[in-house]
Length: 341
Length: 196
Image (tube, rainbow over the protein chains, first blue to last red):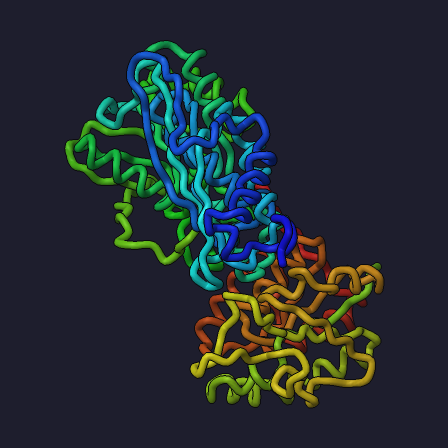
């Protein structure tokens, strides 16, 4: 008969039963989170929040594979949630953590995820305030799925899509496509996984430094470039603003090996998911100031201006090639690349 | 000057006889393909056969229509076809598309002093292409004999050869490769610019 959470050394249904094994598993998770966890094991977290407006977001994570070359699903969960709060101008404070575990998942693998969550939470300056753990039978999930909610506070004016203006410059904080290529390469063993790494990173520090160092009104709006890729972000802004957005193909930051891989796989990097890339819409006179601020941070070294919001009152996205020809970037109906986050 | 190795991909019954089209294209290629392998062996170049083995817990492994997993270790369908095998050849197990992904391949080639690989087999647009790219990333001089790689669909093969030629390999007919060895005593490394 099992006598502790690590005996057996893999997740069993009783770890989700609410009984003794459940409590032991939760204790192990809490111990691994350490001071990142500030919950009191009550049914709800009781939090102090500064007066004023808060930002709140939620996300679920089903990435395949859940463990990859330079990260895992825990890293993606924290970064994805933190970044969603940061891009609207909020300071991320608190995260919840829900876990759905497959029977048979090694406890060591679970703790690897929890350790990643702790490390990313420490880097992002957020705390885990409550959580939940459920266990399902073999095959009902793929090893581990996570769900988070995040709360942030506004210490400056919110950043909104509606604040984008004609003439705004479109800036990317880093290369696109790497996260997708890294994961697809591991899934199939394509050979790119050591050359192309996931860009997954918490970007609240980068944004905080940028917004603190640039003048008020320099940055109009920000979005993290995740599912659907750059194309999806640009289409959202074109629809929200009613304006044409044009980007220059030759200025898109795409790593050479990522170009190789996307060409091999028949996908376009502008549709590829990322986990550590921002798309910023900035006032034209602030372009160089913003680029300099981004490039001074380790997550923004490859920042580059890729295009602009035009004054044309037609909500489309155009790609200008090296010969000056414009073509319309169509919005994809769906994605052939599931489970990238 | 480093040694040259010939790599084959997936010359196994479960792969070759999967579709009539594939069986036919392999049959067409076999005479000159095996002749090239024999000539390379005669010149002292080792042939390494990459043997695809599906792991039972791999969710991405292709299953048969009846749900069973082909290419299981120890089964007849997973064996390298005898027509392509000879004494002195080395069989290296792989579990994914690239012959270098979590395999012994790189260590074996390094131990043998190999710096040039000639990548052959099937399918061109999957295992040959990824193995060649992976070899390129690991610093090998990569050559691909265009008449010793096959695909079910010739258009896939042609597109893949264009990709290989554009990014990371020298693509040439097997007779041209032998002529190059005759005239230059080596397979020259092409200069590839990897950074913008």
